[in-house]
Amino acid sequence: MFRMCETKYTEIKHCKIIMAEGILLLFAGYAYPFLTQQFWFRIIIMIREAINTGDSGHLILASATNNSLYAVQSTLIFMGNIFIIFYFANKYKLDRYNILLISMIMNIAFHWFSYLTFKICWEPISTILALLVTLFLVDRTFNETNSFVQVFIVSIQVFFGFYWLNIMPLFSSYGLGQSESLYSIKNAGIYLNSEIVLNFVGIAFFLPFVISAFITATLFISFSHNISVMKDNYEKESKLKDMRAKALENRIYQEVKSLIHDLKTPLVTIRGLNSLILSCKEQGKLAEYSQRIENSVMKMSEMISGFLYETSRQRLKVSELVNYIRAQLPLEDENIKFHIEIEEGLPEIYINKIRIARAVINILENAINVPSAYQFKLIKFLVKSADKGISIIIEDNGIGIKEGDLLKIWEVGYSTNNTSGLGLPFAKAIIEDNGGSIEISSVIGEGTKVIVFLPQFNDINEQND
Picture 1: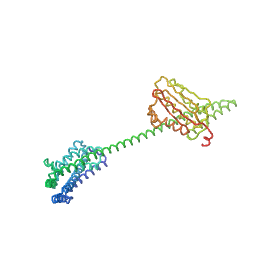
Picture 2: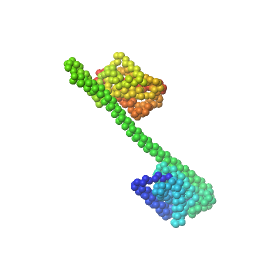
Picture 3: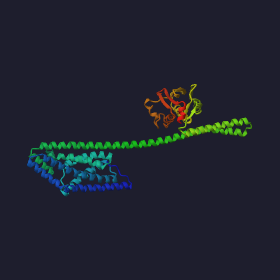
Picture 4: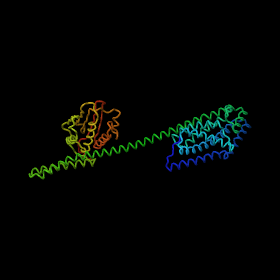
């Protein structure tokens, strides 16, 4: 019923404060009848006015005042007990059934104590019935919300609703409404032939308030559950963002590794040519080696610039891009067959070669890694002319992608084959940054087709840069 306080000093101190508040509420419950004596006298006056005028409306007002006073007092005593039990439940680790039993006994005991000591009237039957319903609702509400304010709102409705049963002459034979003020109200009702009115009013107030208490408790529980779900979702989203950030960081690391791997080729060339220069005595060969070293250095510079300056683009022959991409493909893998077809007479393109190459390689890696039902993985790499540019078409004979997943594949972190889920979003961002576009279609069991459009070179491109 109650969530336990942790053994931290601040939590223990918090429980002790609640214990002190519970004692204060009990004192308030005992002092309440003495502080509200004028209202009790007002009830007697309203009963006399009803008899003198023959107006049963005064009896209803007297009943409302009486029940309100009883409900507030019972709620104060109930809340005081709840606060005190909360302290002991946490201190002695009581289970919910013991808590409910002790709550019931303590509430009845405190009411009897106030009656015997201070002669404060109470209605045992209606109070016990109200306690049973209140404890049932509080057990559900507090366990979900852990809010004393919500417990107060629910409990006062239950007590106020049940105390309307006390004014009903119908239940007098069952021991309800035996206190002096309530007995006087019912006798006055009998004198005025208003028993039916009192019975009707009693039910008319009892049902709405008790039903309202159940609805209120349900709403509190639902609200608390929604808050809990939102909190869980927020925590999951935060964890997911952290995972995506780490995955993105890992992706960047992989891209840097790929760049470093690409840079090794010209470095090896430079190193080899340099050793040849040292041993070469022919002037013509020296000039050739020197030019090849210069070309390798230019290639390295181009790679670094293309990686560091994302928006930089250059006029480029399609064959240069294709040759760079082909150098990265695992053509020696016997389980993968590549079908490469390049159309003749393709226009020059205007792109960042290094970054576009990395984007296309990412798409090819997806095609290579996707499972296939066939013995050999067949990957088609086609380059064709298109309106104002070229199209790079990559097809595989993998298992395909479900139609519902085609839109999700562009989301960072989403993957259909247990990868980081960054390859396609990364490729899409780079291609679009270079003025291109990417489309994907797939058939389950047959494979996936990706079409990358890249813009051709023209004077306007160069002027814009």
